[in-house]
Each structure stands twice: as structure tokens, then as C-alpha cells.
Image 1 (cartoon, rainbow, N blue to C red):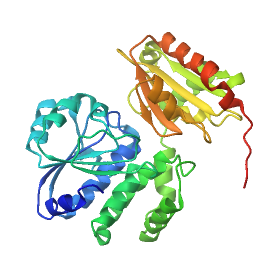
Image 2 (cartoon, helix red, strand yellow; image 1 turned 135 degrees about the horizontal axis):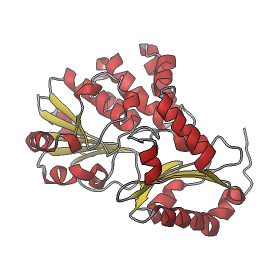
Image 3 (cartoon, rainbow, N blue to C red; image 1 turned 90 degrees about the vertical axis):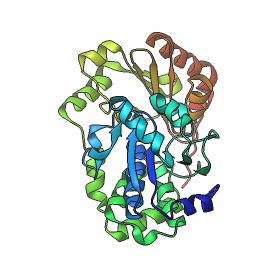
Length: 341
């Protein structure tokens, strides 16, 4: 970790600390933030977790979920806390642009900034950096950071439950981005006594009637299969958002259902917002949706899970995606995949 000794020295005495993650936080963003929060509390620091935008309701069971500030709802109050911070942790994002409304106040802060992240090509805005694209999740890296600090004896269920959430969500229940290193960490978590069955149930079986009906609508009415390209698309308009009163978190995991279809290797959920159209992409095997998001949709992420956006009409974005798949990626998506065990 770059400048680890400097950070360790700073953390040796109580500090005012802010923990941040990216806008529209997911399980890894919230899990890594709360896991780090529960660890730093034991060291006597004064800590505030601030998310740029609303956090998903399906994770409301997490310990101290209700202590997290939402910047878009508390701008003045949260800005003052950021300005007073001595250390700022940037978790699960590699560019200040991913914090949206918080970008300016974070950029102007004179605090010592720390990045812990697993996305490609991190920007240079932090003094201490733990960046590893081979890690399954930022939660995995927070676990390793605590070990690096020599504080493995401080692990408790509050820390490990939070970190396990991010590992579960970013690996899709251990279906991708896994490694022997990750499973060794998970084994140590299980030995400590965390309940895999309970946590998996809370994370993956958390649909409300509303969100389940929305999923049914997406699959039955909005799903389009490009059979000649092994690709599936779900596109939702602003009218759909209004009709189903879609809120943050309601579409969690929808794009993953497309990959359950035999032969589908690329899936995308395209959603029209007020001023922007967002894309959430997933893939199987070696096909990289990260490349598509980074090169064409002002985004990025991981090889098999990425996102992007365009300030264009929904129809334009859908057609742009289809044309790219047909002209640039069809051959790769339809080549025979040899499975060896």
C-alpha cells in the first residue's frame, strides 16, 4: 500500500474521519464503509460515513445503517463534516467523478485522503492508495487492510458481517471474481462464526412485492434477446419509472437474471433517468463489458460487471449498444467456448 506507514502513524491517535463511497452505493460500497467504520471505532476515532446518494433499502438490516448520512439530503451539514475531517477514506471508487454531488467538497478538502478500491485505472487524488484489480471486492481489501494494520484481533461480527455483504454481492454469491485468496478469507470469517446462510438470505432473498412485480415486468415485457449475438437487453423508460414508482435499489440484481438464459454471454439493463441514461452490464467468461463501458459509455468497472451512462435519448443509447454488439463484438460473443474442468 502506497504511503502505508504514514497512514498507520496518523491512525495511531484519534482523528476526525470521513468514510465515503460512490453514488448509488451497492453492497460492496456500503459493506466496506460500515466494515471500516466498525473497525475504526475500536481505535477511538470520530467517524462519519457519508454516501453521495440514497442507500438501498434491502440492506437496511445492516448494523448502523441508520447512522449513514446521505449527502444529497444533508448537503450543508455533511459538507461541514467533510471540511473538518483530518482523514478521508474513498472506498469502492477510483475517481472523484463517481461521487457526483460530493466531488467538489472532496476535491477541496485538505484532509489526508486514502483510497481502497479494486477498479481499473485509479485517478491520482489520494495520498495513500490500496488498489488491487485482482481483488473480488473492496470489502476484501478492507479485510486485508485491517490485517496489514496488525489488528486482526479486532475483527468482530459487526465488521465481518458488513464485509461479507460486499463479498457476496460483488461475486454474485461466489460465481465470479473469486480466488483461493478470497476463499481463505471467507474461511476465516466462517471460523469466526458469521452465518453464511442467514447473510445470503438477507442479501439475495430481499425482494418486496413491488420489486418482484417490477422484475416480472422487466422479463415479460421489456426483455429483448439478440439471439445472433448471445446478448440480452432490458430497457426502461421514464414512463416505466413513473408507472412502477421505481426507487433506488428496486432494480438491484435485475440484469443478472438475463445471464440465466442459456447461451447468453452479455446482458445489459438500460434505464432512462431525467437527464441521463444509465447502463448496467454483466457478462460470462472472458467477455469484457468493462471495455465496452469504458470505451463507449463514459464508465468502467470490472471485466464481468460494469456500468456507464450517456446524456442521450433512451432509443439512441439502445440503438448505439445494439450496433456496437453487432459490428464490434458479435464474433467474440458467438465463438465456441470450450469448457475444461
